[in-house]
Image (cartoon, rainbow, N blue to C red; front, top):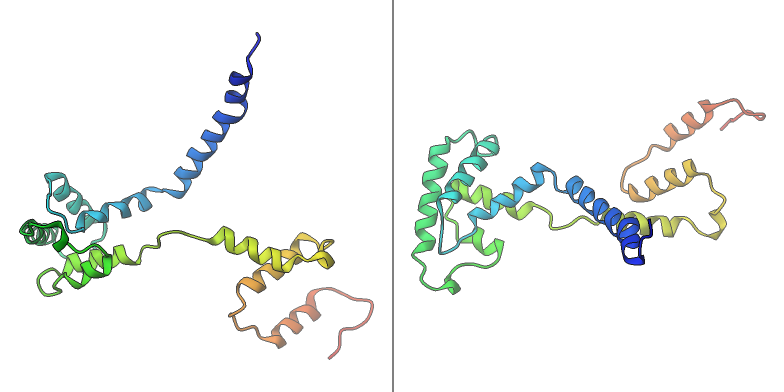
Length: 189
């Protein structure tokens, strides 16, 4: 069976790449992370639907511990008041655009649970830079002089560099080093 170049690259590169991207997205976007996207229902807007109310019910049951075990019906009714407040705004310019403005426009006495949901949404990180941080750390640690370094030592140095703000007891390190294994020369301080 003769396969043309296009079909070969589709099977050899394109489809495996797509599978890799899809599996990576599934790993990064777990159901808990996807559940956080539903918090956008509390964003002020001029139109709401019944699906929004169902989403609020689901969020109220998921975050019941953060809401001091407030009954779902209370949260739904508070959300309905929130809807009425923003439906009354005729112009889209009156609706706050940033999350900090939304929190400021949310009266804590009138909408305490909505304010908590908005604060949760404000604290969710936008992105994660762990890979970039670790690569730059490795670049600083692994110089030309240390290219023959074994993997355990490189990992140890990388961890020390990343967690440099952790207090280390020098006496404890010396004691552990001294007890680690027998040496030809005694380790004496």
